[in-house]
Amino acid sequence: MKSQEKIVVQGGRSLSGELTIGGSKNDALAILVATILVPGVTILHNAPANSDVLNLLEIFQEIGVRSRFLSASTLEIDASQLSGSETPHHHVRQMRASFNLLGALLSRFGHAEVAMPGGCNIGARPVNFHIRGLEQLGAKLRLEHGVYYGQVGRFLGANINLEFPSAGATQHLMIAACCAMGRTVIENCAAEPEVVNLANFLNACGARIHGAGTTTVTIDGVVGLHPTEFSILPDRMQVGTYAIASAITGGDVFVRGALYDHCRPLFSKLLDAGVQLEEDAAGVRVRRSASNICATDFMTMPHPGFPTDMQPIMGTLLALSDGVSVITETIYENRFRYTMELAKMGADIRVSGRNAIITGVKRLSGAPVVCPDLRGGAALVIAGLAADGETQISDLHHIDRGYEGMVDNLRGLGAIIGRSAVVVG
Ligand code: EPU
Image (tube, rainbow, N blue to C red; front, side):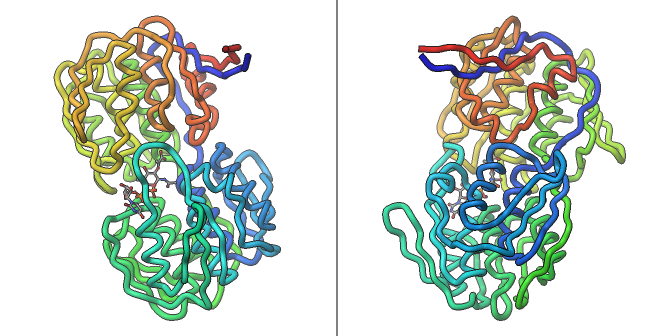
């Protein structure tokens, strides 16, 4: 017998009111890795305490980097006593962003040991762009039994062309190159807001990075970085998730802290679907009154295209639309697994390779479902809010990686939702 937690939702309530968005998981993880380069105390505001961040802080502890939350969202990192370059494999394998420790530790120590990363099971997710870029910067790397061992004297500036605008590789190489000797130019870079904010953080620490947010980033190496105080971005994926929670329930929710510009690719599709959005300086109001959800097609793309992380949640909204929508997923080959769970709730979705053809249905009905991954799990909670009757969602460890306090947030908007331990087996 073992106990497993579930989220239990009684669907059918329109959400209303206001919630405040916390710090971005992906921004926090990238910036936390970069703090390794700073031999001093960094203060991060708006830091989330989701399980991925906590896991990274455990890795930090093992290598002598001290961390503590000074308040619910102010995090102090002290990398002045960094003492090891061998990261604990078990923790590294639980997430993706930990792989960027390889470049950070090589820059600080000249040697590093980092296991191949884990993260959501949404596709192959190789690390070849990271490895090729680090090697172009002068690192000697070897892979043995699933672990990368690296050595470098000092990184040397290089011209790097990424095969694909990978967010992680762009961030990793920016971190590695900022204390390199000479100039590094990275072409075909990712332009995600989290890439720009990482460059802003590094520049606040004394780095000289230009062009972040465009396809070419130039990094003039500096001798070292100094401590700073900095803010993590509001989480644009949480903004999108709660915006769609409002839309799917015919609700009226003010999403405080939402940065409209960061969410424009998603918001433009929400407008196509008939959702009303009003931007103001403090956030975005998201409403859907009597209107139907309109079917609409979309394709996931690197930023500023439609974000792959929002695909499962937008797909869930379209499952209740008034027509047929076609989604094309171009980033991750396994990101339609949530559709099998949605089918248990009555959704009509046919997946064929990289496409999902969604024929809108009039209603979903609550059912026991299992989170396939982080965003797929969030999508199932959103589906439960709109479904008739009770939905039970299990395998919550996926959701906990990126949605701190999701149940409380939704309850605050009027959802009938709870989290309970259920004895199984
Ligand atoms: N890719 C390669 N080789 C590489 C690196 C990437 O082929 O060396 C491929 C990937 O397999 C994928 C594409 O390039 O097909 C883009 O991957 P990218 O490197 O941009 O993704 P990532 O940096 O590993 C981050 C987020 C993901 C988000 C993607 C895309 C973090 C920790 N993760 O991953 O977030 O989906 O960018 O925007 O920042 C999530 O939060 O749910 C999540 C999965």
